Length: 239
Image (tube, rainbow, N blue to C red; front, side, top):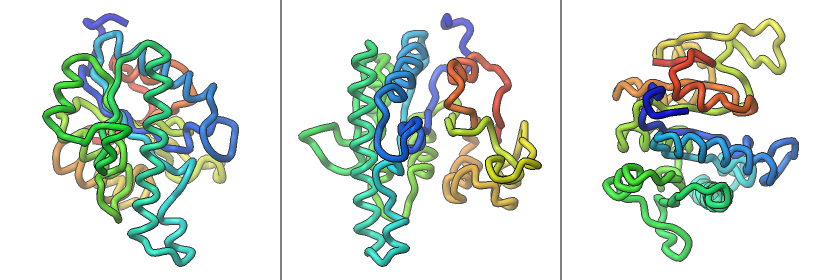
């Protein structure tokens, strides 16, 4: 892909932690993270400035333990640390693929990554580095979806891409409901009122109020991320 074929110059990519599990049911599958890293490196090499937020659900989900009786704040802090683990794993995979990248954490963990500072993050992007935003927003009660929306707005991304295990947003869960229909386009208000599970309401409202378009695509299809930044109409566009 050449620079003159790019429809978007700066994007924020949101990956779920579960996306790194591959065919497993826990943790990180090396083949999966290497494939994703290779795709991200190819995009970066083509001139796309990429910010990346990864969830932590493959390792730990704070809200789940809170339902079991753990203090929600403690659980959410543990979940934030899980996203740091995933970000460091992705950094390693990206560097092995040939990309230059930085991990920036909303929690201070100076021995393993940089603190998140918006101006420094933008400078990294301008220098062609992939920037991995870890530890969510640094606050409990906010999901990594909300963190992705916030970071996309802060860095001035042209588009936020949510890469999932399905090829867009459906009227119902397509895994359990064969009659579910896929949307080609949605407004943020429709996604919120219909409770479609695209992202949590806080993340959707942030995007809506700041004009941040969102495209939901299937991470499992190789080349989908490149198709999105080239301007192809795949998955579901929410705006």
